[in-house]
Length: 145
Image 1 (cartoon, rainbow, N blue to C red):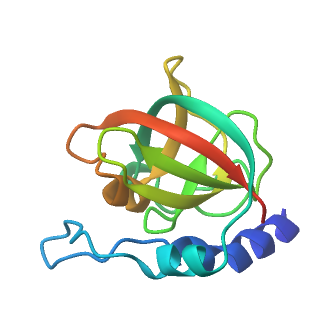
Image 2: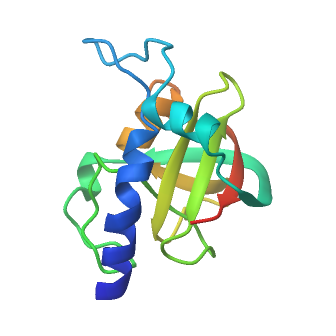
């Protein structure tokens, strides 16, 4: 488990760099993020398109609790739970309703609702615009890490 935490910690700055620029009220300003600029300069290789489905999020209730990978869940980190992808996998999640995308690192198992394909952290859900509706249709792409 210790090796995984090191991998996710190493990949986390890239995922965090994908964050949209937020206004003081916490809403996205629509400006291009640092990661989007970096991605356009050196494109991230998409290994596999994983398809689309419903995404939900988890946050405060689980903050600080251990994830299936053994690290503590941080609702402010760009992480996600997936049923089968290996821990440390980098995924681009795109909200199909608004086109917003984030990069997340898989560090947990779930979701445990049959109609959902991924649970993202609260930070990722904020960036994707999923907080108010609680869930939304997303597209998933596995990225080279």
